[in-house]
Image (tube, rainbow, N blue to C red; front, side, top):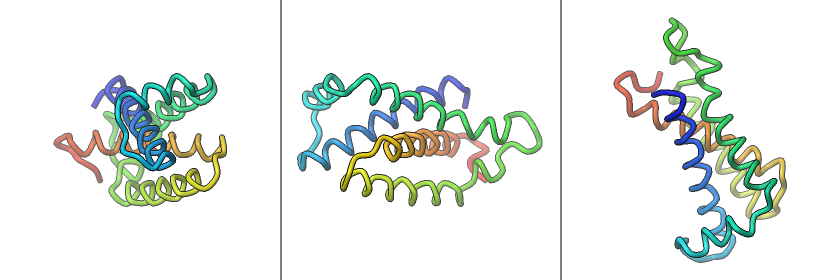
Length: 129
């Protein structure tokens, strides 16, 4: 996948993470009306944090394991790391349900961005390591 694809994927996963978090906090299934309302009521810092951390997480694996080199698709692109990141994401999600924290929210969106990168790369012929 290309860098731009990973950036868009990271933002989409960040937005999905927002919908999931908001739906659990509200105790209702998400629908487009309140998800747009949630975004409109978010502070600039929250929107910036969601976009920046999701994008950073989405491009970090290719910074760690640069494409088109012999070391591409090593641990930073592995199924083992994907499992670890999913566990960490679940922990951050549960923590955010209990009490909101800007630091945990940043980690939450970063993890979603990184997970999006691995999910997209798993769809390529090379897959994950």
